[in-house]
Amino acid sequence: MPKDFLKDAQDEYDVIVIGSGLAGLTSANSLAKAGHRVLLIEHHYQLGGMATWFKRSGGHIFDISLHGFPIGMIKSCKRYWTKEIADSIVQLKNIRFDNPMFSLRTTFDRNDFTRLLIEQFGISPETVSAFFDAAREMNFYDNDGATVGEFFAKFFPGREDVIRLLMEPITYANGSTLEDPALTYGIVFSNFMSKGVYTFEGGTDRLIGLMKEEMIANGVDLRIRCEAQQIHIENGRVTGVTVNGRRIKARSVISNANLKQTIFRLAGEENFDGQYLEDAKAVRLNNSSTQVYMALQPGELIDEDCGDLLFSSTAPAFRTDLLLARDITSRTFSFYYPRTRPGTDRCMVVSSTNARFEDWANLDEEEYQRQKDLLIEDTIQACEKYVPNLRERLAHVEASTPRTFQHYTRHLHGASFGTKFEGLAVSRALPEQIGGLYHAGSVGIIMSGWLGAVNYGVIVANDVDGYLLKANPGSSLAAAQQADE
Ligand SMILES: Cc1cc2nc3c(=O)[nH]c(=O)nc-3n(C[C@H](O)[C@H](O)[C@H](O)COP(=O)(O)OP(=O)(O)OC[C@H]3O[C@@H](n4cnc5c(N)ncnc54)[C@H](O)[C@@H]3O)c2cc1C
Image 1 (cartoon, rainbow, N blue to C red):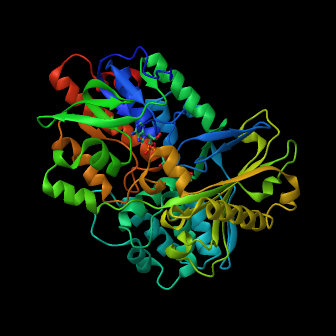
Image 2 (cartoon, rainbow, N blue to C red):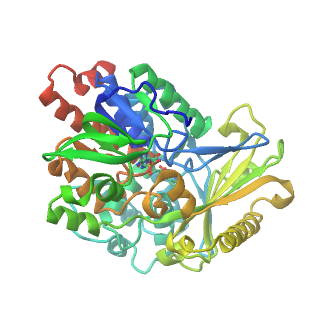
Image 3 (tube, helix red, strand yellow):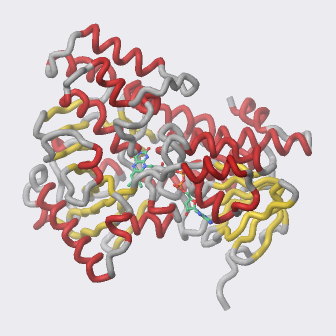
């Protein structure tokens, strides 16, 4: 008989959270801590969503999305998770760029970028300062319709090299383009620029393990290999979820699944009004990625001079379409030294490139394998510029594609960062359409990435807490959060 992954689950909860990405985990933990009965269901055999890892024989562990996040993650983890998690966040100090326009190293913070822009790129101190201030002052409610490209043109007209320096990492970090609203750039750039780029010591497996311990301590009922098939709605209110064929009642539901999947597949079009559906249909998915994972043989060390994060490109200029093209010219290499997982003797390199689902979707199995092999081959060659004799020193190598991301996270088209910017308004308006139904997960540019997902999880947990309290005064998330401070 197949194993029942819902064995002993209750017939009813206050909240069912669909999906264990960082937003789903954070919502579930916050609500359980406030005393609500929470069931978290994840279709995969591992928690974490895109914040994930995989192991290969020989003791190799690869991180998928642990490349860098802003300092704000320390505060969010301390406040909404644990001190132990927050204390494991450390800075990556050696960020490199190497492309036909320039090669440089930076600590990736405002001071160092100011130095570079003045000394290496010859920009006046006044312009640099005005640019940083304008980016920092942007906020979500002041969208004047300007694009990222127009924002750059105002400060650095004709300076493709400067635009490349300022834009390439952000495009990599969240798939944003020169055509996106300027504020999406300003907010994310300012987040990173506040104090540089950070990582989690011990790897993603340790982070998710610590989060799991905390959720269990707070009483979240955690279930892996449990797929939500339908969200039930009666008289404009959510009533439960069918999970692995079993219907479980809930007073509210948070979907951490892709926004479009939530609306069109799990809830069903018939439950929404016409304008909302139009808006939801118009939401664009974000792009996907390919990655190549390379493990060096035990004890084979990479010179730390390679850097922590290297934005490398052979393209003569910065163009969004070039970043997405199958003919890869831009790669971001993440170098993982033994200090990533203290106590090991392993070095890994993960190469990431933005990619389009359609370039991989319709290949037959043989061609798919051939293209993956080519991707691996080209990546090893490109990486040997920085890690001499890499090929001979490798113990394991493999690749993932947009198909891989779609398979493991159910994100339509393997979207790495959920949806484009317009997804945020549709996500926020979901409970106005269906009482008790919320979405917390990568939408837009601000509410994605590790920090964005955690913070969005908190925002939505607060909304759900308010919704549940109206019906059942007594428990309060706000009170639980205050008690922690
Ligand atoms: C290659 C790559 C590199 C990245 N690098 C970085 C980086 O360096 N820094 C950074 O900050 N961010 C990075 N990101 C982005 C970051 O990982 C994500 O934005 C973030 O982890 C998304 O969290 P989320 O809460 O939106 O949920 P997701 O991670 O999208 O998880 C959603 C979860 O829902 C589950 N689910 C979906 N449908 C169902 C269903 N029907 N039933 C049950 N479960 C379901 C999925 O299996 C998944 O676990 C990267 C992403 C990718 C793909």
